[in-house]
Length: 291
Image (cartoon, rainbow, N blue to C red; front, top):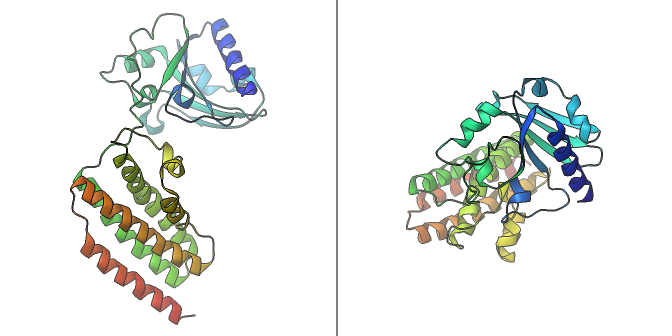
């Protein structure tokens, strides 16, 4: 915490003395009352330049705040952002994510009808030499709040979940561990199971809650029983453990999916689940027969 606070002050002092910089903002978790923070929380800094070209093309300015040991750079074309980024890890282990706006681009963002998500999550103005932040709307801290799914979205996630379990099963029969892991972790867990758990938690808190990125706060909001079931969906390299994890995923999705469907008044695809489970058992029997 001390290293991070000292680095933040060095950034502010440098910006105040730098004629190229017109404003500095601190964003994200450190200025969001709903977000948990600790000594590993990053500094998310937005630097607004009169012109940012030189600072995008050069990196020596990042050394004003310490010794960088690693860096990732993204220009304005990355994800169609209106800013460039330099994400820097320093040798005191403080990580700073710098967003580099030109003044023109920043003002265009300020004038948008709605506050962008990055600012709505939370921001604090640290430097403003030209009063360019005076028209910024106040953050509502709602950008990260879990939204209730439409019935179409709910059914699509469940349909895709059960569909992709068949790929995992086939991979396990073939002993294709890497592809099985890709499908189970990248697709099933990240794209389907995590949203289902988010909706499950939010439905119990009147849709006024966030669990942070990719389930970081799941353990905090799930009962010990459900959390234990989540833990059992993880596996290592042992093939039998991967089979067990696949069926644990199926059981968990079924349990919370049916509870959600009842609570939201949506239809749960029980026939789809029944038919896919038969297929999964068929695949596992073929796997066992080959041992």
